[in-house]
Length: 509
Image 1 (spheres, rainbow, N blue to C red):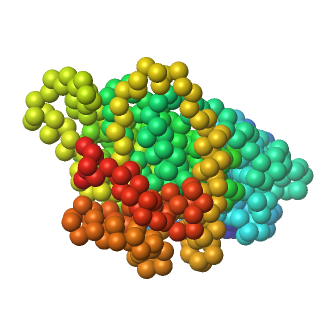
Image 2 (image 1 turned 180 degrees about the horizontal axis):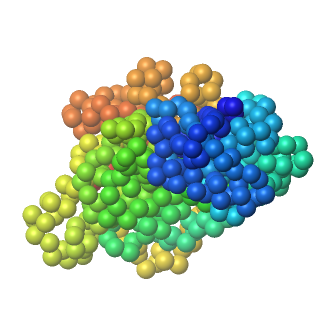
């Protein structure tokens, strides 16, 4: 007899359904697994058999064949354990075979029959949304799976409990919270912008970056507040809406990261400057694709402190995701497109010694050292950064002047984003942030006023801006207009956007 049950594996950040077919036939006792299973799945033979015997069930003393479909997809991890056990029990007539057809089961089996948590529960629930199928997960993960609406979710404690649920003799544990509820309170644990004293230009650039989703670069002496400012950027951004929060939570779940409920705060990732390209961009081998920091920062902030100290190939690998908002990973045995739409924040010292800036600069670096340090950030990368500011050491009088708090600035950012969203929604386009608007669309449908357009053309004509740079200046000008409540960017907004781009600063590309 052949019985079927479904489960799922994670490929990148998406859940792929796996159909598990089990046949109990005649022959020498043994379990054969087919379908490109990795070592963890092949080892499930022993885990499943021990769990079945410790759950008071009967292990078939004959030949068992388990097929994992589609056979061409490599399967990794231990999430298929419980589904393999269910398929074998159904094939041996110990549970009704029809009860497993519309049920998806996730869970790793312990030798004593307990079901342990596995990554990717939220991503699997998203894949099943609206299908009418039931999802049974470890009881420790049922609340996270229950965050996704339109999915019948239940938790099971052990294999015995799971079998009783499928027989109709028990009920699964329901989610303890309603869909779209979250355990994190808005703004919890986010540092306040009021902690940063002085740095009015950098604070303004941070507000513009939050309002339009722009990329930001900061250069300054050690200790002037670059890291403090970057850490406060997520607090200026509005909380994630329902669909975006589910998207981000599913990514973190697929990566095996703890979410503690629905993620409402924009994520913040700050990899160390010794990080490899695969850890920042994503990668892997042997058919296993690992999520990188750029994907974990999706809809949030990626902060590269001491940016020139990063490997050159890591920095150059950021070019594609900065433009497209996606990472395309191609390996010999696996391919995936991972989301990576984030706000990049770069921070660096002016030179290796860190003292080569300001009126009292006391740089001890040679010209060759300074040149080598500056060229670590290539022109194509800097050309993709909308805002570039220099941070001087604040004056003593500024240290006692409290700046605006995160709540005050975040309210202006929220209003500006609502104006931008209303404009793009009215035009019927898919993007909702100014930084995501394509350059040709802005030039043709949303140009600045006549004076602003003349200033932009003049800067382009004298080669002060590349074509990409001109488009990014126009996007920033729209964000400045939204912050001021203006219907259209004027020459003052274009000039301010060009100044924030810092073409005459050390960041000039």
